[in-house]
Length: 100
Image 1: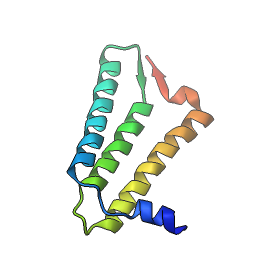
Image 2 (image 1 turned 60 degrees about the vertical axis):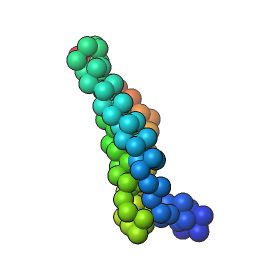
Image 3 (image 1 turned 30 degrees about the horizontal axis):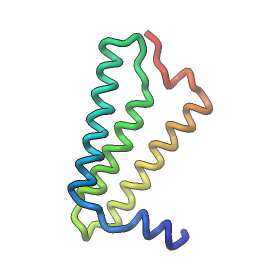
C-alpha cells in the first residue's frame, strides 16, 4: 500500500466537528429514506448504503486520537460499502430502486 494512501486511511481521527458532519449526513440519509418509504412510491435502497457508509465514517472520526488502526478499518469498511452500492447500480440497477 503506498504511504500516501496508508497515511490518509490510518491517520488520526479528525475529532468531533468532522464526526458531527458525518452523523448529520447519516441522519439526513435516514430521514430521506424514511420519507421516501412512507410517502413516496418507491424506496431508494441506495440511501441505506449511504446511511451506513456515512455512519461508519462518523464513528471512525469520533474515536480517540490513539485509535488510528480502528479508525482506518472503519474508513475502509465505509469505502467498501459505498463501492458496493456503485457495483449494485452497475450490475442490477432495478434492485436499487424498490417499486411498490
